[in-house]
Image (tube, rainbow, N blue to C red; front, side, top):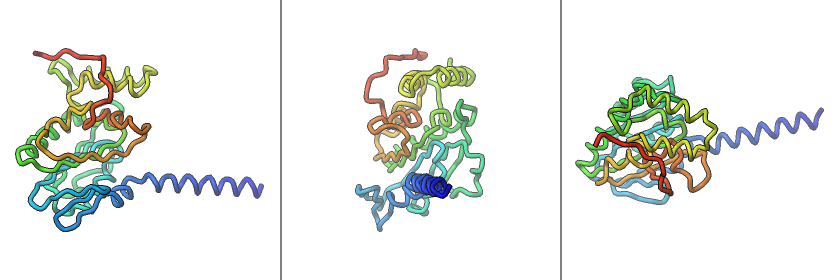
Length: 235
């Protein structure tokens, strides 16, 4: 019995240590810092002395990542958008610069569409001034922000497609290949709205190394292969 108790205690200690190691807030604190006129992400410094800074956070870990970014930037952030499904997020516990959207999961909802429109507007503003844009991406974001490639694709169409895909038994790569075909966000299409900006993407990843484009269906990262699935648009 003593040995079993010790084993349980050791297993619990290992589990707790693993959770601490992947805590998004701790990761942000160790990764991002501001020193005078520079922001340093990992070992990469960028001059922000005369630059606006925008941010977009997407996914289940978005709120914690935002908290870490806020600690580093303080009032330096020009504007940010938080897209998550966390029911505890509201304006009272966000910095003034942030707008929040409670997107759907595992299927998109009206807030998911509104979040995408807000992100497009924010990126257009950032692009005009060649600002720095920081993307904070984590799992679950595939449904929390969405925009169809065609006006002919309704929200109910998106919901039905996602419901079918996640219950199909297909791999995440296969599911995302289809999702990218009818999405104006996924597969690097979101970040493409700010081509003149310096961009940083920080990802809390639950996929194998080299497959980060699968986290939240890769709103800032195109897949390493060409999808064979296409969806016609209105043109």
